[in-house]
Length: 197
Image (cartoon, rainbow, N blue to C red; front, side, top):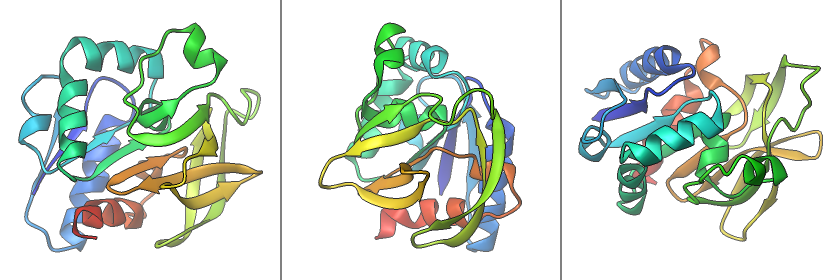
């Protein structure tokens, strides 16, 4: 199994390490590749869009042709995960901040996101979160977005303060938090198995 991590910016290395540990725990033979180039995602079995600055990541993936490869992978039913800024990019609709910055979205998750939903003043916090299919998970939020509306085909996996912070639509998984910043690989394991279910 080959997993591509879109290495434009954000917690790229942390995702690489977490995914490698998850593959090992699942006893899946595979490789994890961080990439900024076209042609890698299309040859992969799964892709992760890490956090970072959503406007910057959007510009780069669309100008480099990586966005089309992510859309193609999703279309083929392969697992696609976005964390934090990655969640924003996977969504169909953004808030006024997303519109103001003219951030182009992938539209793979029938959801509307709000940037910096938990405010800048509490820049980061960690909370135990009940995540469906995974269980209790220590979630790290850093200037996190949140989902404020979802379509009928979207499954809510976790909520916090009236916001949806984890959701899934078929093979697409969107998280407002950073599972790669903990030593717990269960969310990465759940993600890798999405293609089978």
